[in-house]
Image (cartoon, rainbow, N blue to C red; front, side):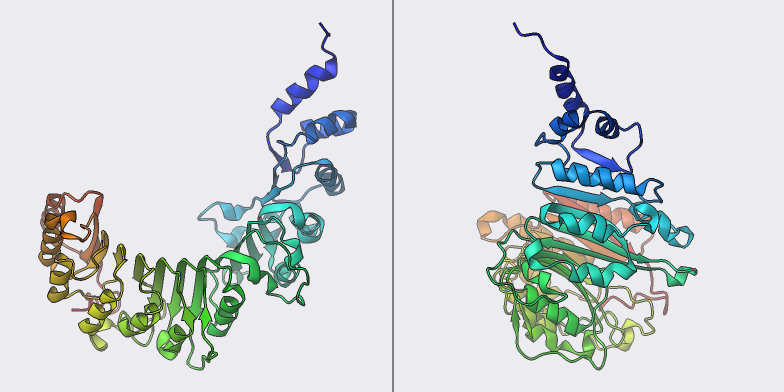
Length: 460
C-alpha cells in the first residue's frame, strides 16, 4: 500500500478548512496569505478546486497594505477556475437605524476611498460576476451606468448598488439605492451604439423605488426594458408641466409591478401609454397633494382594461405626503359605480387590498357575498368607519356557500377601522374569530388625521 505523502494529507485538509468565501482585507496570518508566501503550488491546488472561492467579501475602512491586498486579490481571481463570482462590499449602511450624520465616507468604502473600486475590482471581472452588492461614492454614479455595456453582462444576475454622498450637515446626506436584475441573454452579433441606459434592454428586474423620477424618465426606462422586464418597482412624481409621449409602450413580460404615483392629477394620461398584458401582481402606492385620499377609480379602470384577465393580485395603498395641507372632506366623494366597474373587469382577481379612501358600499358587499363580483377572491383587505358588521356578514354568507357555489371563499381578511375603546376592540376580535377563516385575520386601527383631528381619510 502506498504511503501517503505530506502533500496528500495537507491539501485535502486545507481544502476542508477553507470556506467558499474570502474576506478582504486579508490579515498576515490568514491561511491564504500564508500559502501565498510559502507554497504557490499548494495555493494553486486549493484555488483550482472548483468548489472554492465563489464569494468575495470586502470590509469598509482604510487599508494600510492596499497594494498587497490587490495583488493577492488579482492572483486568486487569475488562478481560480470558478466561472461565476459574487462580490459583497460590507458597509455601515447594512445596519438599520444608523445615523449617517456621524459616519465619514471613508468608513463606508472598502479601502477608505483610497482606491477606485470600479476600476480596480469590479470592472476587470464583470464578465465573471454573478452578483454584486456594493457601495460607491456618488461621484461614481454616472461612470457606473456608462461602464456596463451589454457585451459585459454575460452571467450577471443581480447588481445591488448604493451611491452615497455625505456632507457636513445631516440635510446634505444623499443616498441613491438601485437594484438591477438581468436575464441570461446572448450578446447580439452587432452591438448597438452604447448609451448610458443600454443595459436596461436585458433587465428582468428593476428596483428604483427609493429614487423619485419624472414621467419622461420612467417612460424612457419602460421603453428600453419593455421586451425583458418581469419584476419592477418605480417611483414617479408628476408636476403640472409633465408632458408624455403619445405612442403606447407594451410591457410584454412584466408580471409584477410596484409603482409609487405622486400627483397624478397633473397628468393622468400616462395610463393610456403603459400596457400590461401579462401583469399578475400590481401594487399602486398613490398620493396627491391636490386631492388627498380621493382615488380616481376611473383612471385605474382604464389602465387595467388592458390586463383584466391576467391580474390576480391588486394592492391600492395611500402614500404619505409630508407636505399635505388639505384634508379629505374638502374633496368630492368617489363614485361607487366606478368601483363596481373596476371589480367587474377583474374576474380572476384572488387578492385585493383597498385603502380607507375607497369605501365599499352595502350593494357591492352584497354582490361580493353572492360571488357575482370577484368570484376568485380569497384574500381581502378592506377599510370601514362603522360598517364592520356588513363586512362580517358578507364574509359569512360567501364562505357559507362553499366551493360548490362556483366562487372562492374568503380565506384571509384584514380589516382597517378607526381607533376604538378596548371593549369594542374585543368585540371585533370575537366576531372575526367566529368567522373561522382558513388562513388568517387581522385588525388595524387608524389614528385621526394630524391636520383636522378627524378620520378624513375614510370615504363615507
